[in-house]
Image (tube, rainbow over all chains, first blue to last red; front, side, top):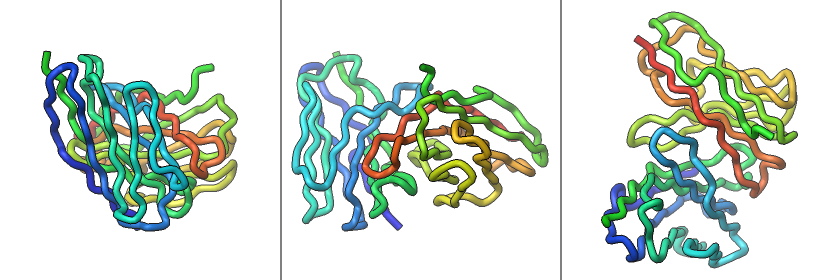
Length: 114
Length: 113
């Protein structure tokens, strides 16, 4: 089955700086890669996703890049703000596109220092 | 439009007791999923369903059963609860499943004593 590794487990950045979270996956047939943000005690919420036919996707201050050859994808947050503090999870679909579930990384606790 | 609703939000059980967690979605989604979230482990798939009347095992199915008698509902059952099943349980749904976002409920925090 699919295996997803996520790094770092904790990331502390100054407000206004950029943050980068990296994930690797094992199944080369995976084709869908979402990122979720989870605040303490809340549900995971989708913030951005990318499909395997695209190398990069942006949404305001958030961007995701995908390198299919190296089997890794990254989340980039620019101009970080206090409300960006949360746990972020990457996930990979496996060959089924997520229809048979997603495999999640173990999460990155992002701390924005004022 | 409530999205994905889970009941109950909290529950404490004794070892050996049984219970059912309910997930309901009002988005007419075909695909539904049950995950568990443990500290430092991310989310792990327990069971999923690709449509009414269907269920399938995920990564960690042992000790759980599921049913999808109606398209909008996906039930997760614990027949004989064990302390190792103490966790936060999340239900999710997706429209077509393939390359589509999964939308999560607020979770059920379950403690087994």
